[in-house]
Image (cartoon, rainbow, N blue to C red):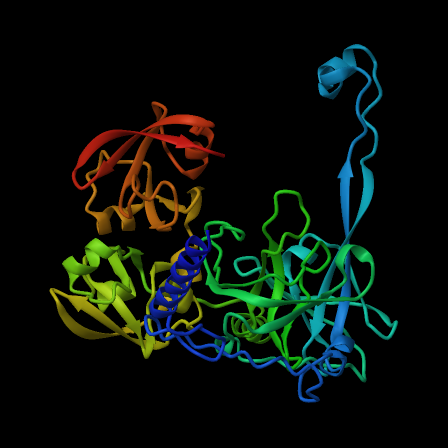
Length: 483
């Protein structure tokens, strides 16, 4: 029995020695195993470090007084309902039965609430267009209790920016930062008056930059949003998004939510874009945008190799409008625009946004890839307003204009081709793969298209049959319209 016990002890000792041989030493927080050079810092956090930030109150004190509540009043007019149902609106029916004329229109005053930020000592305020759109009266409430009437200087629905003006002295003013210098992970604060509870500050980080294609502003909008998880709710719209130095980096605009409440996905317009729009609205009353005259699309990885673009960034020129600045500069279908001046072009949306921020008449340098060779073209931009004055959006992202003598000549159309011509196509439009620039819509649902109005009247929700003329031939296509 004793012999068996000694044998067991010897075996146990041998096993312990073999385990130690296989694991020569224990890996501690200060050592790194040979198979991976992992960087480890096991130093305890010094929570008594006086340099560690424990409050941003002093930083926010510099910007909070410049944040205002924007109260808008909209007046809607409607007639009272008739006790005789739908026939009560028929004049013959009313005369036959001796029913008095309709009541006078009823007026209803609807109140809206948003936020804004004072950016100049003479009273200019930045807010969102949707905060004051359609308002007949606008008032702003300052943080110090002052309540003032505000006038609209100008609005830009395509960026959702509006500029207001108040006449008052001793105004607190916010400082604008350079939004191109922000980085994902930076601490930011959203200020405003959410849900009418009073001025509120929420904290988060910059979750992403350059968010595009969200379609918050529609097919014609210019999106380049800052995404943040700082809580943004109804009433925050138009308020500032500020950095850890108390400077404005964006204007809070929208959230993504299935419930209407904040779920941590909010969007703000970069302040550089806002400042560009503000300057134009103050100096001219409108936003003047540059016009290149190209139909562009994103560069896929497969196409990047075919077109000789190694890093896969850029925008392909799919079509060129006749007599446009692009045509005059010698651009061709298949050119890949990779740089505007010294700025790299990432995709089609970014190119469109960059061109929109250039003034008409300005000269830009386009770096393009053509047949695997890099070329530089100088282009004098036209005016987007003048180029689209006769254009109307028929479908989402599809701009059309009636075929006139000039369009007929530019597109070399036969006399029998009548209808509306596609003048501009947003590459993000669901119809972009079916309707390209230069296509003429001749019939919709077997009805002749005479102008934009008849084209719209012919559309119906769901499946529609189009007769189009493109590149010398007629053909039918079927589109599902979601409007």
